Each structure stands twice: as structure tokens, then as C-alpha cells.
Image 1 (cartoon, rainbow, N blue to C red):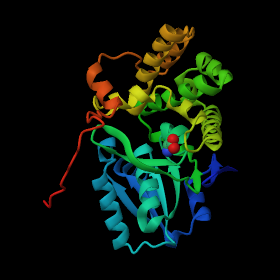
Image 2 (image 1 turned 180 degrees about the vertical axis):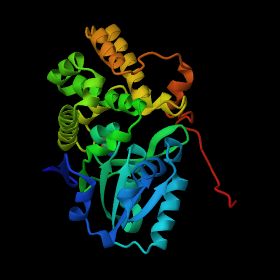
Image 3 (image 1 turned 135 degrees about the horizontal axis):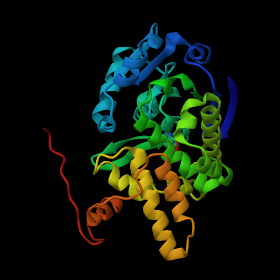
Length: 319
Ligand code: GLY
């Protein structure tokens, strides 16, 4: 296991690369820790959780909502969690988002960390401090920016990862290569998904490279005033399509990247569209989709229809 600390303006994150779940007890005090996972991770790895206080959430993006947050908060109250409690999210992006968000608001903020179990969470969702929930079709509409105290990598979790989830993670890896790492882009062009899946050293190095790439972009621009916006490549339209068409995040981002490349080609003479699309497709990702443009644009703009001079008056009634 190697430890690397990245300091952000709002706090530091200790990255424990190539570690193992069993090391969690050296990072956090079991008596004052609550683990949060989802039913898929729990079913595949239930033996790892013995002896820990644990909350198991239903799996799926449709549960990344306020009712799930309320349920977790009520369970924490029942468990008598207090300011000394650490929350650890063990799962994909939905689990890390909910854990980070609840930890940021429960008793005005608890210590929290993550053990990302999906490729997408290892290279992207666990890193950067944005933790929040969806509101209807609007992804990540409510949330915070607060950095996890630690992120522990246990590559053993990838053994139970379905093929679709591997492909999902590669959308963010290709995105990172496009925005900041030409050498990695060329590696992705020449290697294959199968090679990464079968060689532990190869995937471990790729995950670490991507995690540090993202962490360093966030370190330079935590509140997304400039450089961090690069990480949104493919995400603006991707997010507008994701919940509307129940796509996986990676699929939505990949389609978003495809459209962004074609637009850039038309508007700014971008010449690498074919290479980017071919690489995404090589990792099993879609790059085209027929979608309702008007609907997508409305979601994209958050459908702000009220004019500047209109009075809007809403009474919130008791149910
Ligand atoms: N938690 C994901 C991010 O901050 O980008």
C-alpha cells in the first residue's frame, strides 16, 4: 500500500493506493465508525463487513435522492452517531455521494472517507469533494464540496464488477486522457479492455494515474472557476440525458463526449473526433444516440421559464 496526501483548499485527502479493506481498521477507529454500502456490494462481499456498524442502501441512481438521505440520517440518530463518528462509504458513485453528503450535513459535519468499489468511483466519483443528490431528472442538483479525509483503494472489489461497469469506468478514463494526458490516450488506443481486466498491475497503475490526474486538477481549482471545468467534458449534455433515458453515467458521458467532439469539429476545426470516438467504442461505449433535443436543452438550461419581471409566489402547504 502507498499513501499520498493531496491538500486542497478546504482540506486534505489521504490516498491509500493498492491497499486492502483490512487496512481500514488502521485508518479509522471501529468503535466510532459507521460504514455505508449498497445491497450489491454487501451481497458480494458480506464477510468483509463483520464486526462493523453498517448501513446497507438499495442500489441504483434512482435512490440518490433526499428520502434516502433522510433514512440514513434517522439511522445515524438511532445508532447515536455524534461528532466523533466517521462515515465510510463503500461502493460506487451513488454510495460515495450519499455518504459524503450526509457526513457534511449531519451535526454540521462529520469526518468521512471512501472505499470505492467500482472502476468509475476509483478514478472519478470518489475524488474531488462534490457530493450530492439528484432532484428528479436534475443530476447532482443539491450538494456540497467537501473533501473526504481518506480514500482507500482495494482492487479486490473489481473482481465482482460486471462487464458493463468496467466499460462505464472507461468513459471517465478516456475523458481524463483527452483533457490532460496524451501518453495515456495513446496507451488506451493500443491496449484493450481485456488486457486491463486481466493484468492487475496494469489496472492498478491506470487507476492510480487517473486518480492523481483528477485530484491535481481539483487541487488547482477546487470550486470550479476555470480548470476544473475541463472535467465536465461530455458531462453537460451527458447529465441532461442520463436520468431522462436511464443511461449508465459512463454511457451518457461517452455520448456527450461524442457530440462535444462533433460540435468542436464544426465550430472550431477540432481534428481528432475519429480517434476519440474509436477509443470510446473500443472500450464498449456508445457515442451516438437519438434523443429529444428540445427536452435535453430544457433540462440543460434547468428550464428557467420565468421572466425577470414576473412575480413568482409559492405557498408550501402541509400534507
Ligand atoms: N465527487 C466527484 C467530484 O467531486 O467530482
